[in-house]
Image (cartoon, rainbow, N blue to C red; front, top):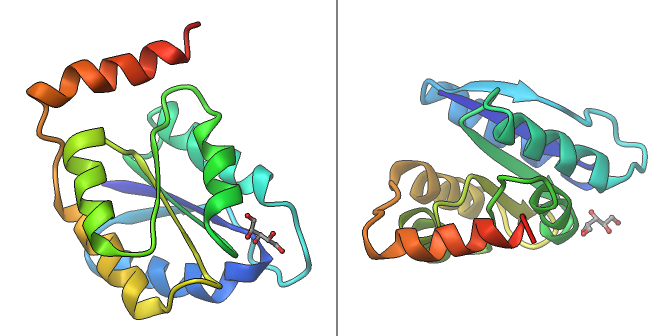
Length: 146
Ligand code: RB5
């Protein structure tokens, strides 16, 4: 399983910690950077993560900026992407089970690395339930075609 990862300058350290964490669990990471501490623009990295997932080059995406919001907005603009921006594991879990989210974002300035790991675990370890949720997920994706 492959995870596309991307981040801005606020989240280099957290990206590296989460990258090592998921690699230790057997995931292959495609790292879109940034790996520099100079100020950069989160939309670039969010789009790269979103495109990797939408194009099937990665199974999942994880993107991190200061709040997780900007990079999540960017990833979510890519057709086929469903983003979960969250600060706690419950929403991460339900976003997989009910919303079939394929990109997770969070904020390096909002949560600590141990909370981030817990969120990542809940998100990666739960599967989409389908069933009654499929009609709603279909409706979400139809919005992209209007
Ligand atoms: C960078 O200062 C900050 O705006 C960015 O990391 C992110 O929080 C945007 O949503």
